[in-house]
Image (cartoon, rainbow, N blue to C red; front, side, top):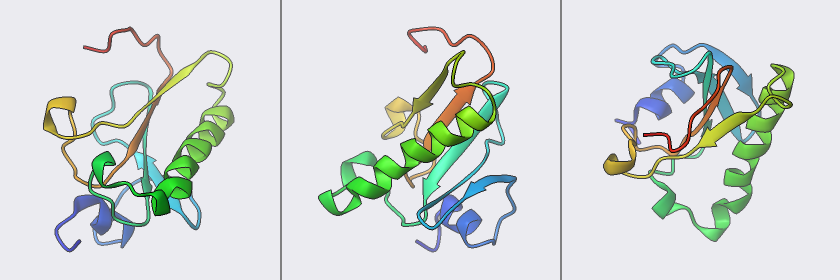
Length: 114
């Protein structure tokens, strides 16, 4: 998608602080962090919302969770806890329409989130 912010980041057209990359996804620091660790994991393939995920995308979406768990462990959050969140559409807080998994950690995270 030529107008997708995350596709532009993926393609190197917009700078980001990358913290993880592999063949299926990449991750970068959120520009408006809500916790000491706030990293966004995006698939390299453009998928607008969770509603657009197909059976063909199952491995890709699952891979986002594996990558997030790996980074959480590397940063020492695996024993204290962390949250992973994927918002769908505006009422849930999705502002960029390219699916992305938020990894939040480094402080107590309350429930419900708000």
